[in-house]
Image 1 (cartoon, rainbow, N blue to C red):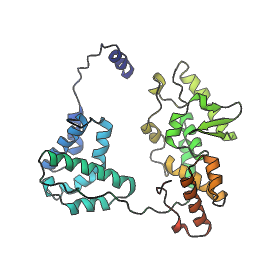
Image 2 (cartoon, one colour):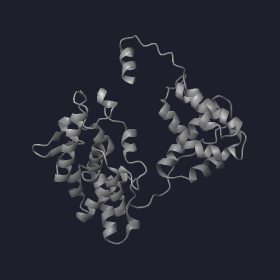
Image 3 (tube, helix red, strand yellow):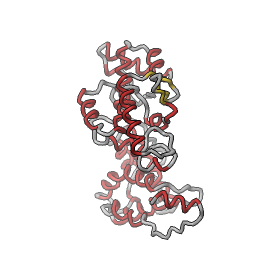
Image 4 (cartoon, rainbow, N blue to C red):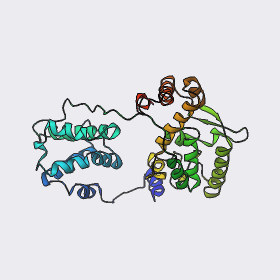
Length: 317
């Protein structure tokens, strides 16, 4: 149905008279808030989604993400306040201090957007997020993952697509954008090489076998697709684009370790095997000089028995 509507839109014959369900959707995730807070949040999300003067409209998924980041905080405030005018700078700082890393930054972005909108609309008297920086709590150092994280991931990889994702992450430490961007032209099964992220790598037996199995599956399932990307879904097989971030995330959602954690652990493993030699890491994975040095520092700290001295996984890695 999506492809049909795209074709009709392209030739100017689409008359989409379906009602906009966005406003109706807003009621469900905000009905647990205090009445006045829920009304203000719905106005804010509607403005974010539909855009306005000097404000670009945001997609439904992006709007949902902003609400998801702030939902628990708004729920907590609803238990104590009737209106967002009562929220203070101390409340905002306390909410941020309950999170760290990515979640902290996402909450900061959402609250700044919310109170910025309410202040412009003169719904609140002042913006309690003004001057507050997201900052970051120190993250724990990089440590090797437990072995059961790999066992669980291997057990979960039941489809050919999942197996490709896993092997490219665990063996080649490939980032998600690089995996999504892979095309058939990047595979050279004859001379057993793979170009990923602009870096040409030799194919080990496991990767070679997994890719051959997947290509046979791909040809059987989508024999007439014109999409040259390696990984396909039932949606992208009828277009030209790559698979989505959400699809990649969904393949191993709920596992003990995410694909990103497995990628970081793979590079740490190689750093330990090379006794913390950054040049070796850069040559194997095509890492930048700074990233290779940070992994080398983490490996040296572990080898020396001082893991607390290793940099965290988010300090430029």
